Image (cartoon, rainbow, N blue to C red; front, side):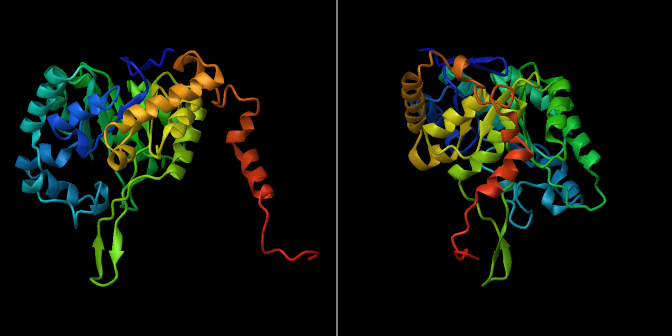
Length: 337
């Protein structure tokens, strides 16, 4: 059976990829992910704030709105609290690329595209087989238009893509007003892959302290629905690799993402819950399902339930929404009323 897949130009022995997480923040962790069965590993993210710490970038970005960051600035760590700076990140990448046989993909978490050009070049030269650009931008200013936000993403992608000699994937949010159109623009701008979707971590309120607090929750199985739908609708319509992330709890979610049309399936939460060896559990589950269903390769099953190939394409559109509402049975409706 052929489990191989091709993601943004990289040949992977199977589709299960370890996404950026604390597990990939050390050489030992990266080795454990390889030993656990991951086909590739995305290095934990380097934040733009780290790259610009010497030029006081954080103060400049704070003026643009506190919600522009992955976390609110009220609980964003101080610069000296970051575990790994740019130089150490490059060193870890170099050592990881030499120590493991699977592709190591660097991860850049940014708000703007400023200052990334030279660093993207260094990452390419240090051993990264690819770059994942996570543009974590949540505009809080009412004066900022949707068009401005879209251009913001495109500019960041262009800056990194121009400096990189390796494939670049863009990790995006689902909140564009016309997601399919933006996906096509990203592809036309040179993205080699799209990772669907970024999870915007939301702060919570502490009712005792009357303060805003961080609240990081691992993804749950039900969260697969949104990226599953969009991957199924985009498969075959844009010339770019598609990676799925969020909601992978077991082999079933990997299988569903592949049937939708994903080239790679990334997971963090499942590995944090179950350990790096869970990668192999996912692969084994996919293999066993393929054998039962008579599939000889991942390529054969990929996109089998995409919008272009299902018998009823309206299942992804408004008609299915209406049918779902009509199918609901209210348990509290009185008989005869």
